Image (cartoon, rainbow, N blue to C red; front, side, top):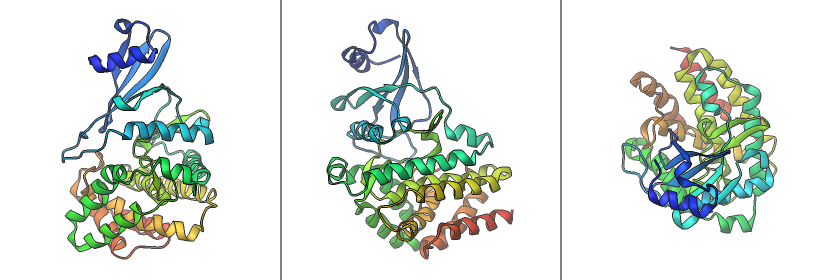
Length: 330
């Protein structure tokens, strides 16, 4: 049942003529927003409202302005790759609410968790992400519009890198320096949460959702964040390890094929520096992945990640290969 504030938002939007006749279904899985699917006669759409405090075990607050930031990211990307984002139907930044079209596609996470790893789709994700970064690189207009380091810090840097630094004192200085360097970048329009759960498998390729972390900053973060999920799922689905690692390579290569704003070597080195830190953060930060609960599995991740946090690689294949060897020792 929608609350009064959300019902009033719907009336103002003009998306539902008879509020009492609509059907609202709360969608699951979000920790940072309330999300509903709305059926209003023949029209179906999604409502999203940002929460001031995220639904996690540790205290985690974030600015409500991220709701408007997400709308702005979607609108910008729609000018670049219209098939890669839903259409925004109505938004009210002051209410931290917006409505977007409902797309009835499965998430990439659902497919991956079923053990069905589509390498060609992974390559499409990499190519689409790379194209968005390429089209937005070195843009003073976008830098001004998405200069929100405080939001990116609250949603990504603090809960992942800084929180993990508090757990691992031996590499704390390395993690904090990485956090500072990442926040200091202003290069492309970053999504900030390129996770399989936020990618729909659309008819024309990937559709990106949940861009509330959007920020004009470090492209390496988006690529590292997405590749991280393919490494983590190797633990959960041992039978799919080889194909997950091939998907890792396909996504990475397709992404770098789009890169023209800087040298591949420089960018890959930064991705390779971020990836082990994010790998470690998904077991020891504020947002651990829900499907890795066994302490033996967590230790395997720590054993792989910590040496690379201490001494970062320059190539992603270095971390990938060590992870593959460690998994083979099961």
